[in-house]
Length: 116
Image (tube, rainbow, N blue to C red):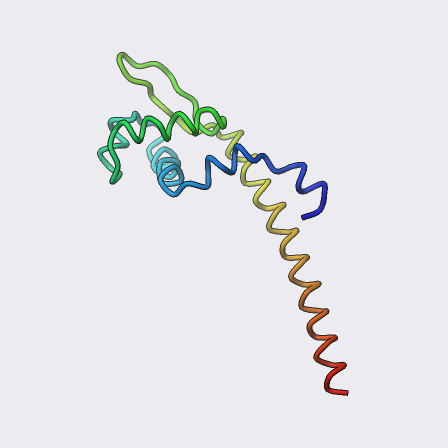
């Protein structure tokens, strides 16, 4: 990764997104618009308490916003932070694509030199 790409990557953000359960929570919140630990827990193979912990991680990373609703909190995706994550992923993907193209050119050059 180039220095500029490395500097743009937010490790806390990617750590939060790196967990499959948290990605599923984000998917559900994006589909439904809003959810609580209880409503999300009914749709996931983990306890309500586990969902609440995952939501806490997503909240600290800025990917979701919590609004108090009685004894619970209603969560929704922070569109701006999610867009930032998408931009970072695109940047990292482009850097890896460039690396793979260079590796391919080197490998092809090696193969041509061996054939000569």
